[in-house]
Length: 315
Figure 1 (cartoon, helix red, strand yellow):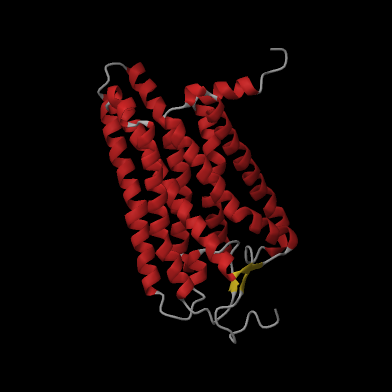
Figure 2 (tube, one colour):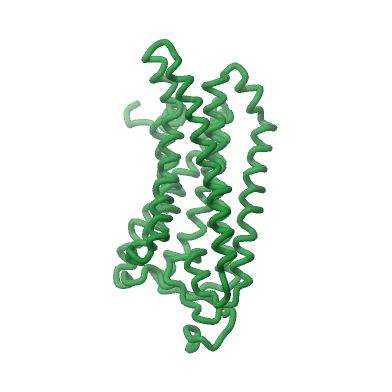
């Protein structure tokens, strides 16, 4: 450990995660809200999976996509929280070289996958509202399986070169990462070589992956809103729009924190690093916590099943 932060090495066997630089004294206190987010995310997403599995009336396209979202959220939150809490509670900052890049791969892979699932859910809402008579024939179980496999392959293949490029750079400056997890931007800044190709591929990944997803979601909701406004009565319009409200809230819960995190990284010279790290954590932790709450509160079938599981006293 004595020479781990000097320049007399190339590709060290371990990296050192600092946590939140400048807030080391408050790590234990900061861990409380993060641990709470994690506990709610685990409990909420497992509850969603249990309810959908045990309730035959929920065995439909929207709820299958919701289960995919729950699994993705579970993987995302467990990819960063255990190591983060070990830093905050036990000052266990070392992470193996390969483990660091494995964590990075899972974070980016499942972030892209979650974005793709939101597109699939938008497709479900589009077919249900704009072509309801064909909904059951278009979104069949085999089609849902194909969509799920496509999302897994897309995210895995798209992200793999991004991570492989990072593993190929020589790391000879320092092995200290000023972050709570192996963030790609924080990692490549430690590399000694020309990292422009990683930067270019990162931009390609953002625009071809997340950017296209946002475009398809926007196009879907443009058609959905046209169909809703063509309905004859206000009650019918409100009722139909209500079927999309949960999905819209989940979209905002995912993309808004991510947007703030990306903005703080792009304007890193004007934003304190501790705030950048906090935002990078929140955009990965908030959606897994909020998604099951949003669907649990706003979806009648899930809400009714929850009330049945936890009946009031005296009923």
